[in-house]
Image (cartoon, rainbow, N blue to C red; front, side, top):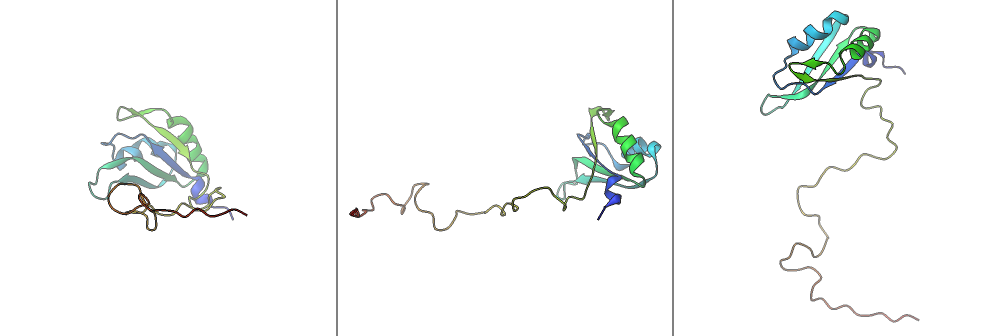
Length: 130
């Protein structure tokens, strides 16, 4: 299955924190019809996370824009522009994803970190090897 709508999407990184969606539209609309501009922002502060996605109706227009704008200065910062080739859920990774990070001390582990408990002071019986 081909996800053609993703081929017209650009990933833009290295943006100035003051860059807004309208500025991105102005830079990229000369390359073709833009379907969507998404400037990624921090949910708590609403400040730019310094990257964005611009989706063109035509993958060819996205390719031209990526070629021409990549490395150029926007709001006094050099930006990197890449054309996406497939959706993020379609990965080349072979290994399973990493488990979520724990918020506390792992259970069942002994020692470390000092304090009471652990294996210090515990006597072990030596086994006999036959």
